[in-house]
Image (cartoon, rainbow, N blue to C red):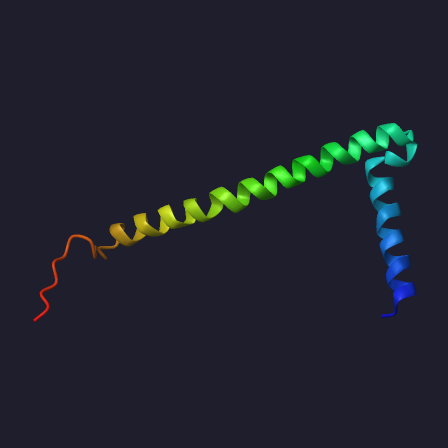
Length: 80
């Protein structure tokens, strides 16, 4: 895939995005507000997922380990 076809493909995706969201009907300042809002929401969702999803996975993992009887914290190992 060469550079020109990649550029054309990205332009085609952008045109599809504008058609789906009907943003081709907006004025330039409306597009700026629309895109700024959407990008801000996307960044906030990604940041929240980055911060909270590992915590929830860790908590669920610890819960299921305790549920199935793998209790390393309660057992005392004697090392000689």
